[in-house]
Length: 162
Image: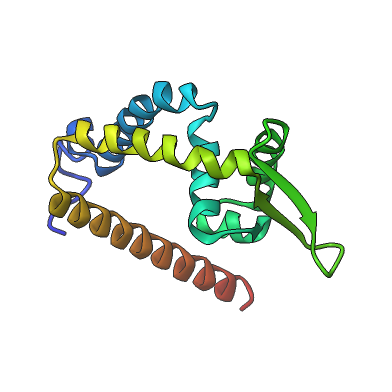
């Protein structure tokens, strides 16, 4: 990278990747909000449901990993989905292991969610190939940043132990 902090324009809002991603994320969630509200879901609940529709019955830890969240962030979402009749919690063979399963009502909801998702995708104005490229680039970016962050944390721990 050839930019240095000494250059006067290094902190322009319009040049920030973080702000572009932040604004795009808000635009997407704003587009989803009224459509998901019609079917009784919030956007974070929708993400949990997507995981269950795709992966089937899953442990809370699995759902949290798929959403790149801590388990304690997923638990309140599961509670609300359970209260709304979309999922049930079942104890696994190991009583400490809790599995989340879709109810028939939760299964039926997938079709309405698919219509909402299609509406948002159409609203982006992007073609299917362009959307696929964008998703891949964002996943690659996330992986790179996660890898870099993990490496930095490991180095910090090693240096603290010396």
